[in-house]
Amino acid sequence: MTIVLVGVGAAIVVAVPLGIVVTRHDKLGWMVMNMGAIAQTLPPLAVIAISFSFLGLGRNPVILALFFYALLPILKNTVAGLRSVDDSKVEAGRGMGMTQFERLTRIELPLAMPVIFAGIRTSTVMSVGVAYLGAFIGAGGFGNWVVLGQQQLDTHITMAGAIPGAALVIVLDQLFKRLQGVVTPATSTTKENTEISAA
Image (cartoon, rainbow, N blue to C red; front, side, top):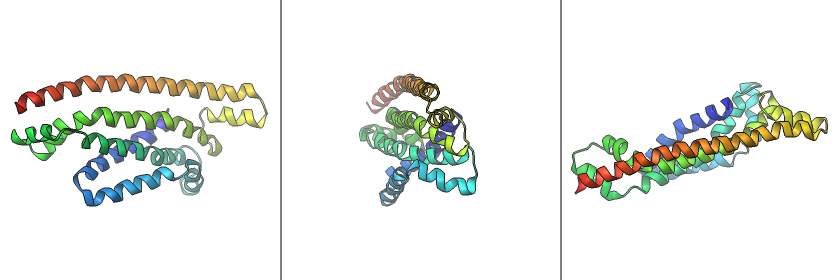
């Protein structure tokens, strides 16, 4: 949980602001998206193998790998969510005298939040499987049981590590689904208020 949440959390902190930059500066957009695509294509095991030489054994190389792995989905969803916002809503805010920052925080981000949240949810669930690789460099976690089971050719030990990981995926998916549901009503309210203001 620590490895996944820290790695994905770092990706959120970087990817969401970058997504905002992409929608504001078209010239920088292609470069940012290409950098995100490159980060996504890096094999997590390769990132771990390279980074543990200077980060040492333990959790840090795995967190770095999860950061790169989660970066692109969150970035793409942030861009898609912001670009899907109806221009009339933004124009209504401009007509009300809102600054660019106010339009971003009070109109665009709330309306884009369900799409952004979907990217965060996907990245978090997918990162659980990558976190298992941490067992090879002493990061701990359920991967230790999987590796031990393979070494001893014991299916029971392997399943003791695999089943909790699968359960964790289900729990995280349902948790983020509920959190996403909490975000959506607030988005609907924002839409209604904007439409009333525009009228």
